[in-house]
Length: 464
Ligand code: PMP
View 1 (cartoon, rainbow, N blue to C red):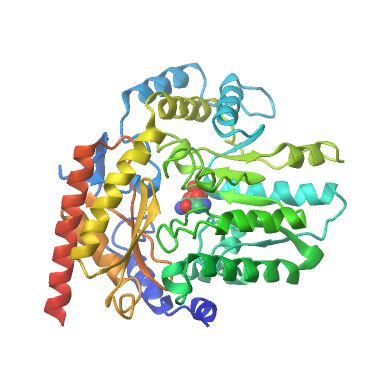
View 2: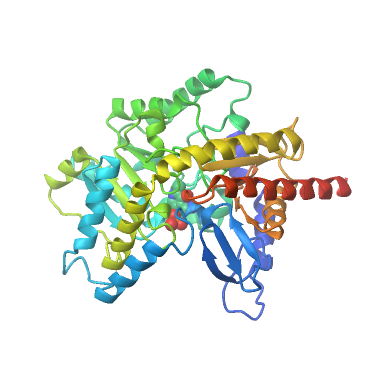
């Protein structure tokens, strides 16, 4: 019933009206979105702070879109960028090897333990690439009918047709629905709304049983499973019960199906480990990275690929022919390499774990005082707050999305940026500051959020 509720999406009217407002021409030629609100013009950034054109300062409590992992205007990265830009910015990888992309692939491999790397420019492109590599793997293994991927009914995997086909996100799917596959059929590991009284062990058993049934219903058509180890943009830091990811990996292993971890948001230290899958000792067959890899300094993304997948493709009939024009370009590669070096040399994975604990404790404390917080969840510096209009019934805002909107706007008015992560059936925000955040900045973030939540509940009380 919950799944049906998702498909029928009570959020749709709200989504439509928000887009209609947003797309009214207002003198600008840009098509705008984001709740149809007036947005401030950005001016500049420094560390965890961003400034608008009117000189207002914002603490970037969500690293933009969980992307600016080093904070803004990092001098070391800017220097590498300038030096590389003077040498060469672009050379097509079909014409030249580039030292920068080779070094980047090597470094990524060393940091994550994967032997092969395919470079792209955005998370969505890399998700598509992971799907295509898996399809090529099956073709070369003589099973071209394996083309059905499975993903979770509350999830986000990208704005392109493959990524959207995987995504359980009605607000983003609806416009393209006619072109999409319904890959998003697995029950999400989202205890707050789907456990229905089961404890972690029972919920894990339930999810695993249903996932096995779903995989087997596709028989020799199943191609692989795609999962966000910790959810992001849909639903808000949905964190599975501990047994689930290992159980899903085991289901895949038993059936010889590649497990693809979409770590576009969670990868490269965000959750306090290099990859979020490592929290559960799971080694996916393919891993997708993006966001934090360029950390806001360049659009860059990657697919990490295991030996056995590459071996099957290498032993086959064709090379990998899909790519994107800017993939592996020298400028982007040099910048991403500098970002990875900074993540390592500044111990930012450890900092994410440490500051993550502080942030989590602070958010729990806020949850004890603010009824609008239904649940705090997440790992490291990827934390989510589920927002509810009633903590007993766990009802979301009416319409769904309205609490998310109020929270984002109340925070912004107070100089704090948080990320809206409504998944179509719920209200949620992500709190995910740069991995460079200090203890003092974390305290400031919590104080601003406290103030924003107080203002929100005053509004709610006034309306009541
Ligand atoms: N996968 C996940 C898990 C993401 O969070 C996102 C972006 N929110 C994407 C894929 C798509 O990445 P991009 O927006 O860079 O295309």
